[in-house]
Structure formats: C-alpha cells, structure tokens
Amino acid sequence: MNIPERYRTNTSSFAYYWSKGIGATLLQKLPDKLDLSAADQFIPLLMQVDHAGDALIRALHQSVGFKQGSALTLQYLQAPLSIDPEHVNSLDGFFSSFEIKPKWVDDDKLRIGSELSRRPGISALIVLRDYCLMGGYESSAINKPLIYTGALKKGAVKRLTDTVEFWVNITREGAFEDNGAGIQNVIMTRMIHSFARVNILQSTNWESHKWGLPINTWDLLATNLGFSLVFIVGLRQLGIKPTAAEIEGLFHLWKYVGYLIGIPIALLPDTEEQAIEALYYWTMTQADGDEDSKSLAKSLMEEPYLASYPPYKIGRLLMKEIHLYYNQYLLGPYSCKILGLRNTWLGRIAHLNILKNKDNEKKINQPGKRDLLVKKGGDAQAKVKEIYLKYNNH
Image (cartoon, rainbow, N blue to C red; front, side, top):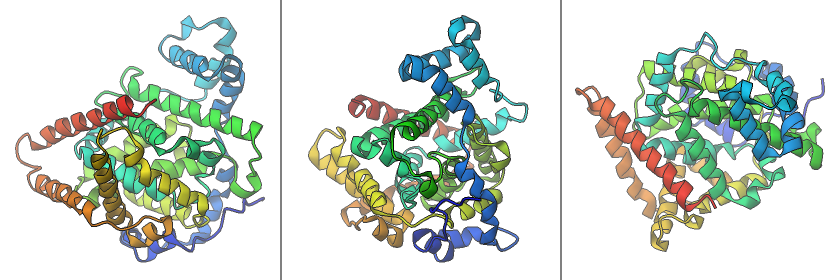
C-alpha cells in the first residue's frame, strides 16, 4: 500500500491538544485507551473520493459550465422530468448513487440538532470561525486544495461568507423537508468539491504521493467532525451546555449532511465517543502546520479589517481584536503561537458574551426560555448572513 507522505505522527499542536489540552478531557470519556496504530486502517481513505460527483462534473459541468451545470442539478432535484434528454443520463447516474432521504433519517433528531445550532446565536458563528475554521489550519495537508484553487489569493472574506451562508442555510427550521434549502445547499457544496478536485487533478501539478487526493474522504470526515464534535466542544467553552438529546440530534444532523455530501455512512459517528475516536486518529496522523497554514491563519485574522462591515475603520479594528481574543480563548496560546496569532487585551471585552451565555444556561429550563433562545439566536445568525452577503460578496 502506497502511503502519502502527509501520513505521520503529529508532534505539534494536535499532539499538545490530546495530551495537555481539551482533548485530554475528551479522551477520558472513552472506555479504553486508543492505539494510534489503529489509524492505519484509514490510510486508503486518503486516496478515496466522490466518484459519482466527479463523473457528473466531467459529463455535465465541464460541457455546459459550472453555473449552468449546477442549475440543472438543482432543477433535477425538484423536477427530474423537466431535464433535457441530453443531460438526463449523467444526472440519473449521480442521483441513483444515493438516497435523498434514507429511512434511517429521524426528523425529530434533525430538528433538535438544528435547534442546538441556532440557540447559541452569534456564539455559534464565533465557534465556527475562531475555533473550527482557524483550528483546521493547523493541518498543512487538508488545506492544500485551498492553495491549489487559489482560495488564499481570493482571501478569507469570500471563504467565510460562503461558509456562513452554507451553515446558516442548512441549520434553519425545516431545511431538509421537501428537497428544501438544506438539501440543495449540501448538494451544491458536493458539486463544488468535485469541481475543485477534478480541476486540480487536470490543471495543476498536484502531488498525490504527498497529500493524497484533493478533498479526499478522510479529510471530508474531518471537516464533518469539525462541524459536529469540535463545534460542541467550542460551545461548551463559551458557556453553552448542550443536553444529551441536543448532542444526539447534532450528530444525527451531520451524519445526514455527511451522507449527502458523499461520505460513506459507516464512517459517520452517531455518538460523541465515536466522534472523539475518529477525530483522534485523523488529527494525530497529520503533518504539522507549514507556511501555508500560517498564511491562511493570517488571512482569516485580517478578515474583519478587510471586510466591508462594520463601515467604520475603528469598528473593524475592534472586531479583529475580538476574534483574536476568541482564538486565544478557544484554541489556547500553544496553537495560536504556532499559527502566528498574537494575544490581545482590547478584545477581552468579548468575555461579556461568555458571561451572558452562562447566565442564559442557568435559565434554560424556565418556561419558554429555550424556544426564545432558539428564535432569537436563529434571527441573529440570519442577520449576520445577510450582512456578509450584502457587504462582502462582491
């Protein structure tokens, strides 16, 4: 078996995370000590990709263009009989490779998981940005497709706008009913992954012997774990205390999303314990961060100032300091030093939000309180999405 060079025991931030950071506490939830050699079973996933999605890109999108190909894909999702016969076979092939709504999907769990996503309000977006996204840059390998597609040159503003729009759309009430916005956004993201991968392999000097295939199955699983397990860990750090039912619901939500996006269902966790094990094996076999990691981290650090909102320079500078505070608070000084993220005193004003979260959690069982937080939190997130789209998506 050919093993990509990226597969090695991590010696920097991830190793610290599991030995001296929050990861050490997570490992205590497991009944047995993990053996890192068990990660070897996942090596083939570095060379495994979404063949059904890639085939659709080559047959449809590369012939009619990505924009029209994507429009036809969503049109097929809503009304397959309306598709021009010229394109039916390729779309039939793609959509026959999976079920839009498998029988195992539990609507109640999806609802609870999406409600957990909304009730922290802005704090949920902070965790996604300053913990999940920034922390992901600590792996040099998973970020290489961003470099090869020119995402670094496009800047963090565009990528963050796209991420916020995707996440907000799929966590709204009823997003996965009747081929709704949730399903459409996940299928579109799957198309973007395949389009990027096909073009990287066709048009660049991508070195699979070093990195595995771009946007491979194991890296997709790691991203899924970022939106589920790492998200939960971040919420807890910011004073949110998800219930057992909410945690189960969130993992079910991301199991469904992961399935739709092309991850084999057997890899997707149902429980926090399963997710901890999966994240441990992936992170602990990642090559340490490199200069690209630092460049991506710097780009995200500068994003608040380079964005078009708030409209005044002083407001954007304050936002930058606030996000730097959350980086330090969530990732810890060890990881921040590796990524080149400095400390901040001004940004400590953000701690008031953590105190507010803790106060809300004390009142969560009061009549109507949880429903109110879900409503207010969802509205606040939707407003942030609108701001990003209005001021930054140009």
